[in-house]
Length: 542
Ligand code: ADP
Ligand code: MG
Image (cartoon, rainbow, N blue to C red; front, side, top):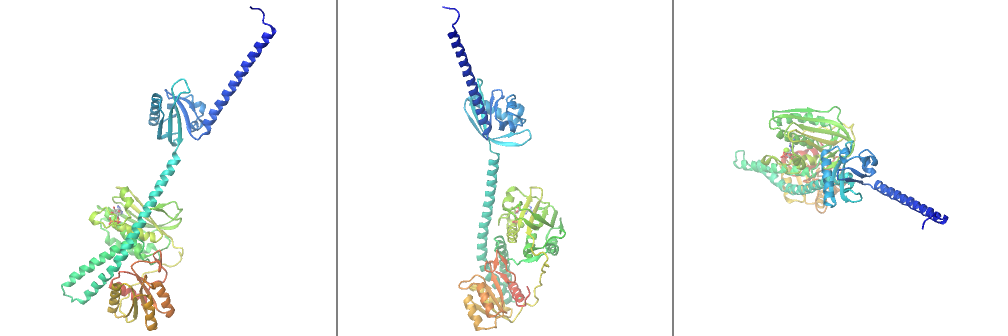
């Protein structure tokens, strides 16, 4: 049955068409929304996202990736990977991974890969590649996280950890070395003292003098090793003075030139107007000598040794061996050679005691000593060295606050070491006590002895005003040297005090630096050394 559609029928068809159109519009709207949703998600997340087909053409890219390649997401879909990536190697490896994922149908994680942008900046990526089936053609979806800064932080942390461990290691070796040195010191006092005194008793022609000389010689060598260990462990007593390092250098130059082989050119370059520092002159000379001798060892076939000083202001960003150096004004002592240089491995260990690459010839104590002395001066050391290219040690010494003070000058050793004064010796170690008495008696002094501070005070009270000098150990049971000193001074303000110790203890020193005006002698001492120090204290020579 046909014929003209009725009005109702027409109306129905128009309604149907209208409904379809509305449906269509709605679908389009939904499509737009989901496209925008996808776009937004892709552009908001902080990762690189793209999809590529078998030919390596981008079929999807987010803004972050487009930004990295200095283009737009729309432009990217028009190009293939080879057009944005300039690095052949990078491109080859990335495309190979893409193919692998597409062909195998299995996802792949690339833990670390680099991506270079047109301006040359490089991002380190952790990348997931996933088979992608949203398109008709086979494709791969790529999601990559930028791990550049995470990696940098990790490396920084590892570096700091290593530095910290190294510092801790030096600290504990230092404690061990200090402990050994302390005990050996007490043993060496009688060995050195008695053998030196025996030498006086023997006849000039006595054959046994030779044997005795050998004992003394060995004892002195042992004492030197102990001193170096003490220096490394920063337990050595330093006597700080205001020092003009240029003057120290010029006075030391002669000795240096005599010590260093002739095929080495020694250049001393004192900087103009270098600031004064606070330091122990003898120890600073030791530092210069140790560095110079090492430089000589490194220049087997001759070369040049340059020692210079200059002022520098540090902003705190310089890392010297193990630690950052505090910002401030410094005097730099630089010791440079044209020798063999050293490997990274040697650089890592060179300040450790007994580390040496010289076999039998080396003690491995030279730089350990330098390290301890400089740390005790509040300074730092940096090393620049490469195999075959020579070595430079830079020593940073903090500038003295009191820069106007005139630097102290050295005092001559008194020529006559004898005396008739009364000395009270206070020492708890019996052997050290008797050798000390023996030495001073042999120089004519009248001697009183006490085993501890309490006994000493009793003796002082008994012999009122008769004792001119107290020679006392620092750490003793019952009453320590410091307490004894203040009680003795209360009894007799004119009495002189000379501390002796194998160790610097906080009782008389702050971090090993003696308080101004404190008289101190390091154990073990030689006969002459003790006699000279006692004479100087009695005569008020510092
Ligand atoms: P030693 O000189 O007895 O070996 P040191 O503590 O003085 O001990 O030095 C430790 C090591 O550091 C040396 O054995 C050497 O390998 C290295 N070293 C020190 N100074 C220099 C230098 N100027 N040039 C090359 N290597 C050096
Ligand atoms: Mg050395």
